[in-house]
Image 1: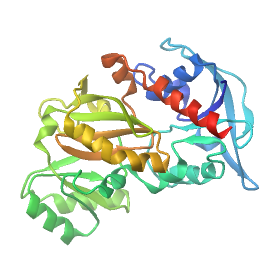
Image 2: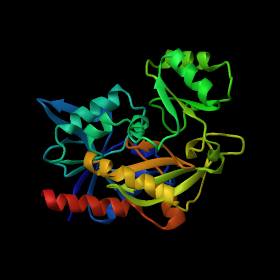
Image 3: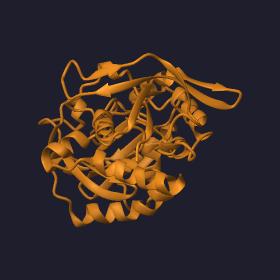
Image 4: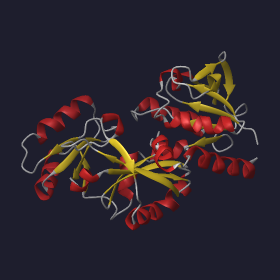
Length: 317
């Protein structure tokens, strides 16, 4: 089976292939003989209700600094010229991101979009996790100062973070009784009108923040991301280091709870974050961690994803 695959992503020339999950997914597709095109979200067009993209065909190689050869731009009719679209641009999850999901939902699933753009839009990662009672630590999402203060007084040490932040940006630890809560909420409010998240601090973060990759609801594997000494953010982009992960019974229980919902929503490539015994996020926009998983376990999440995509395309024609 040879598929025509368009990847909606940030500029391909600027990626770090040593740690980029999108590049890993694309390399797996290329090895299988699929034709690859790339375009940026700004190259999307909705013409008379049909989505098009000004895209370039690409050939990839695992050579740092010389990882891509791109052809000339061509106008792709995304409903007819493409079999699969990988929606892989990085957040922020803003109005431009949301608009792209409106464009792409017009053609899904005739053109298979991974992940389902309607579900990506309707299930922001930090909000989706709240739909599973008992899996999260105590969490409040609000702009109301009184509600936030009441939560803070009840739970003591907390993590404050922006609702639609990514890669560890804007995460702050507040110790019980800290008087800076109001000022920090005001600061975040001056940047965005969105509510903030206040979440009970989980001391187990010092042992790592697990990233578990799920494909069509099934566990592929995971890594443990350990923060620098004295830090609370374990994201690899802000200094965390990756380690081998041994999944616990609780990790598997969390994944089994999520599985039917992820499958129903068409969220095929998902990275969940687990600290201790708690689910903290369900990442559906542009999950990472696949490169580290391959390095530690020899598991190629790209191959697993294309197995599933090809199976779906065979059944849908």
